[in-house]
Length: 285
Ligand code: PLP
Image (tube, rainbow, N blue to C red; front, side):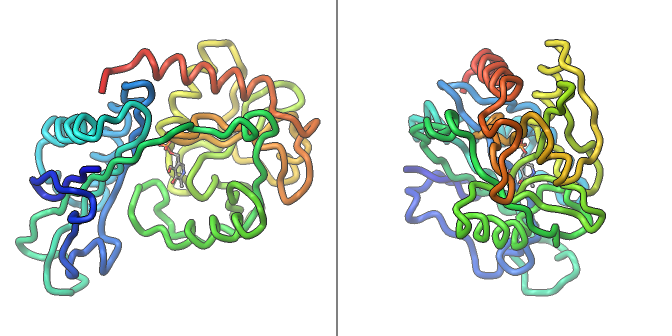
């Protein structure tokens, strides 16, 4: 396994950064996870575009021109022989003596790691769906920026795992679901309308989310971008989560109660297939 650190491809075990990297001390950095499906990058342009947006929001520079970063991504996938898997890419403000203010001349740190994935979903997750629990959303006010400050999602996911659930849905103080700890949240109403929260500072605008919205529109599925409550999700016909690597994954239990008939929904599974077909037709890795 190979990783990339600031200009060098290194064996995974030797891939390290300095203790005064601002990512380590302040979570002063951003990241992306790009999936490779059957040898092709899924939604690579979307992920690169969001990376640029995250960097700009934090007033950070690209460590190299975007097309150079993209070239490194492809090279790392190649060196790891990735056919199905993902590349994790992180950029921090760099190494500098610890001080909250931006350092004057730090160079951004760019690291990438590669992961092989045997199966993006277990058969039982597709046949039975997954369970989610709900927890209060205690994150900061700029969840639209994909930063490495992930402590609240770490605690939420751990709580989900300890409850035997796959994911935690985060609930705002007004009772609406913002999103999952590492996914966007969706429901399909009794009338067959797809509902997911609109982009704002309250959620990360998933790249998979954006593609699913487009694929739904192309198939004539009615869509409403609006917040929904846990109660509405429980009375919905279907629910699912989306992210790079899970695509669309059916949610059949929320806090131990069944969604709809308790089985993966038809709209969910059709959208999952639509995404897989779309991604397999995209740029070669
Ligand atoms: N929301 C959050 C909080 C996430 O961390 C993620 C991805 O990890 C997503 C949504 C889904 O985004 P994407 O589809 O771009 O992977």
